[in-house]
Structure formats: C-alpha cells, structure tokens
Length: 179
Image 1 (cartoon, one colour):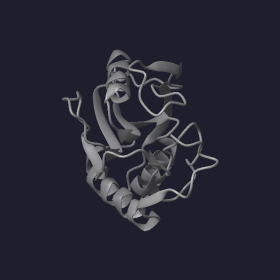
Image 2 (spheres, helix red, strand yellow):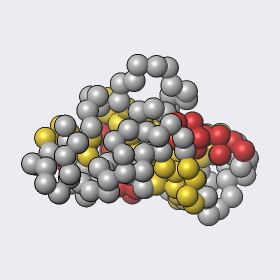
Image 3 (spheres, rainbow, N blue to C red):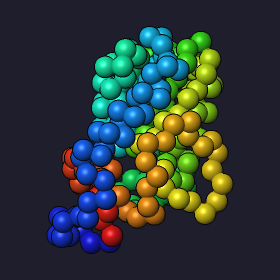
Image 4 (cartoon, helix red, strand yellow):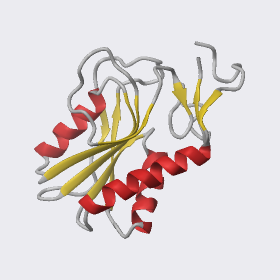
C-alpha cells in the first residue's frame, strides 16, 4: 500500500451528498425504535464522523439519544485486522437497564462490533442495537450482523468520512477507495 502522503487522489465511491442521504434514511429507520433514555455509543475513532451526523439527524427526527463512546482498535495503522480487539477507553456513563445503539463506520470482520455488543451486555444494557454506515462483503459468517446498515460497500480499501489509512484521509467528506 502506498504511503498516504504520496498516493494520488483516492477514487470517490460515495459522494458527500449520497453520504448525507444514507444518514438521513438511517435516522428515519432508527428514530421510531429509540427514546430519550437510549445511549448511542460510537466506536472510536472511525465512527465519530458518522455518529455525529446520525445523532444530529435523529434529533431532527425528534429522537434525542444520549451519547457516549467506546474506543476499540483492531487495525492499528495496518490495512488488515490484527484479529484481536484492544479496548483503549471504556464508557463514561452507565448503560445499566438502558437501550444501547452502537454506531460504527464500517462492518468488515465483525470483531469490533461483536466485542462492543459483549461489553454492552455485560454492562447491563436492556437491549443492544447496532448500526453501521457501511457493510463490506466478507467470505465467512459474522455475528452479530448489524441491525441497521446504511450502505453495502464494495470489497475495497475505504477512506474518508472517518475511514482512514494510518490516520490519514479521515476528513474527506466523500467515501473513497484507496486501492
């Protein structure tokens, strides 16, 4: 993989306007199943862009969720998962007896989402829902599958809208391929 600072421009796969449309459609589907006691838990770092946009879209739809973050890592600066999850920072508030909506940028191996669901259940969440902006194809079954998926992504190395390569390209408004 080329160094992100020397690589040519990434190829746009999903332009900013389509990203906004996907987020608004997700909010319309999620708003009826959450309430003001629901805790939206973003998986850091990549899910932050999506979570910010989705929680604002939910608020516009009248769904005012609480917000927290869980910092998990499976990639580090690599282009493939290391096959294990590191927890860098836990939740800041209790989810005991509350519905939790886990938000992440992309679903590929499923390891981060599965670990987040496990952590929420162990923390006493009454219900755990999951939402990812993008789902990539994978050759093996993954558990759990997300409850809400915004975009069926191609099997390419994605950057932009929170997705990165070694910390670079996250700030792109479009979702792009870097391969």
